[in-house]
Image 1 (cartoon, rainbow, N blue to C red):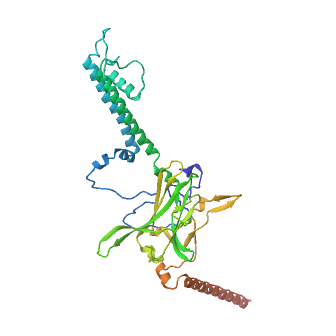
Image 2 (spheres, helix red, strand yellow):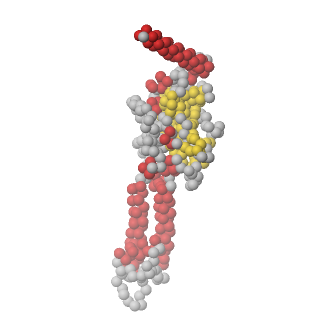
Image 3 (tube, one colour):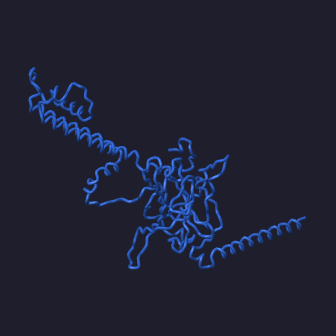
Length: 387
């Protein structure tokens, strides 16, 4: 972990999650399951798959998806089994030609110095890995030996290509790059440009950039159709309002990605009170191409209703210092409270929009000032009476 090496504070986790210790803790309510975990893993178990043979039709992908222990076992056994198989073939050729026990001067064996199965196994290893110690060699005596030599070389090249390619793909998998792509632990809902917005913050800890980075959001909730069909995991896309005004983002410094809650948004009827009782999950997907390897990577996270803070916004993390911009990741997940209406975006629009909210906010602020002024006057009167 980078946090153990002292590169960033230990106040938050790096596995695609930025966590602030000063953030208020919320106790998660009981729910059936989480569709996507905070670290991006999908909480889905595939059961009762009858056509298991489909996985064998794509052997390479199956090998890459296996655990490292299983991959290393298959890697070792593939070479060992091929050496044993061709070792047995070389022993049979030597046995059929009479090379094992004849030591006549004018006798020409198929393979020199093959006296037992152990020597045949060693010759099989020398042929497949092209070591060539020089003691054992094939002769022109047997055509079958020449054919077996060609076949073993081809088989060895195929095994090398598959196994080494599998090991390379497992070490260069795209999700490894996503470990340094971080998301804010909480999402916020507040006013931005006079509109109610759902916002998150994303960042990249590496200097190598993510090219053509895009962000997608989905709301996962349980819905019912007009015909009465219950959809347990209805995935609804929500439109993004990226900072650069296009689908791509320039992820050099932490960015706040916002979604305007309008009439086309699935959060249009959601209020602050409904948020505490609604069973929703917002999934965020960040995709892009790794600059150094050219491999497409994807980072995911999700936000439950109790992880969405109403009436708060993120504090700035970028400052200009000595002619360059500095990013303070200790403030990555920090939020502050801001005046925000507690009603839904629909009700806010129906009741006159933001102008009425500002008028009510001004009236409440004026009333608090009046009450504070009255209390001060009463204290002053009590002090004067005591004198």
